[in-house]
Image 1 (spheres, rainbow, N blue to C red):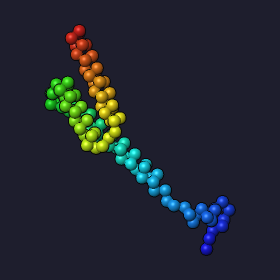
Image 2 (cartoon, rainbow, N blue to C red):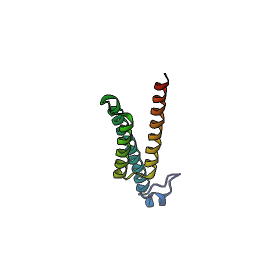
Image 3 (cartoon, helix red, strand yellow):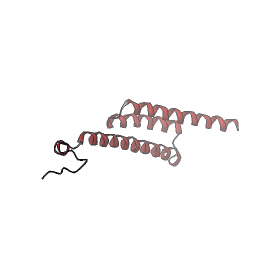
Image 4 (cartoon, rainbow, N blue to C red):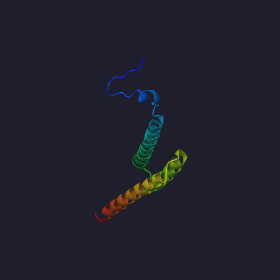
Length: 107
């Protein structure tokens, strides 16, 4: 029994395939974004914990977590955008730390 109600094309309902490719691409992007977010959170919390709780020098901790972030990003198969993001974040922390040192010396 075929439904010939208005607005329904009978050939369309018989030949329609599930759109699994777009769902797979969407899921892949979701997993990649979750990996980025999770790794950023891990590195950020680890850096702050190392500097403030363990008392490690901020520049040494920055170098340690920068290298760790590059290695983990490579192991997770993240793109070159991850490397650029790590460099940008390291520069922001380096500039902020340098400004804090300059401020404390001048005051």
